[in-house]
Image (spheres, rainbow, N blue to C red):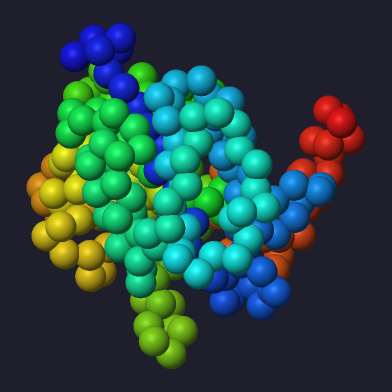
Length: 238
């Protein structure tokens, strides 16, 4: 399929509560240099210039989303599920239903974590180019730089793994809308990301090297690093 015939949509699952962070608000609403994590994330996706629409999926009880202001072409639905995979599936069903965007099953969907605000728009375009060239799904990932140890439940080292073939999966993760929805409908138990669902379905998935700044804010230490990055960027481009 030619690039001009392909449409891309972004899906942002944002229904998490961030219990590990111990914050008064979910981590996607943590403020970094005066802007929420979710706002930064959506702005980065929008800045790639490739999306026909961006869908943010929040929980029905979300008390903060109405305070957000997003660019044109962004829609919000309250269809969060019990797990991230359930939320993604609900978002895909919304897209396939055509009620928010004129999406079709052959369109590409890039699923991106709400808590990865520093994704590089250039990497998003690289991911687009990869799936158009390969004709199948792909994900952003980072080569493993650290030595990796396998340990027993009592933390005794069992083996040192060859890091040359190991990658840290990130997002966005890009797949055909109908194929990803079909894979998730087979069951979401044990599905930690979209790639794992597609792998289980027997589909090929490629990795596209991405920036190490595209980390997920999960712990208080992550939040401190994110704040420093956001403050630095704000000072450089106020």
